[in-house]
Image (cartoon, rainbow, N blue to C red; front, side, top):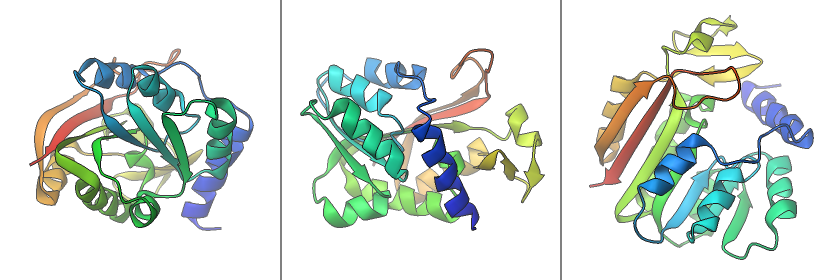
Length: 212
């Protein structure tokens, strides 16, 4: 089985067990606090839909996207009566082919570090195309300075397999890729204390960019 299929299988099993928390992530709360007007939002890697649901509760129109069919089925069962939320199974490439509407904001939490570099580049390119003028992209991901980056099987200087595949992100290199795609970096930080969950406090990167 390829790493790609193994990763999807891992998350299918995870959502079948319904292990994910139901409350909004700190990142979703942070992003929502920065929005003064109602937005048309695409969430890449919506998981169990907790952040999509949170954005919807704030009056935004939300489209949730995930590569785990189990996650999408869970979302549809949990939030089928929430008219402002739409859920799609697949990748951003798939949604670009079938959904012609533009978005004001694209949101992605803890997904970039589960993508290969080529997948990330494709995601950034399509995100740029799907955003309206002055649209924003918010991303949170694990940094190479996260202690977890030192655990598991080594695939490259940024890639590890520990439970499942992760590619840890180097902030300055990531910013260069964003700018090369056409984005303007509004804010970029790397720190602990941003994504605490129980006793876990990972070193994460947060970026906010705008379609220049």
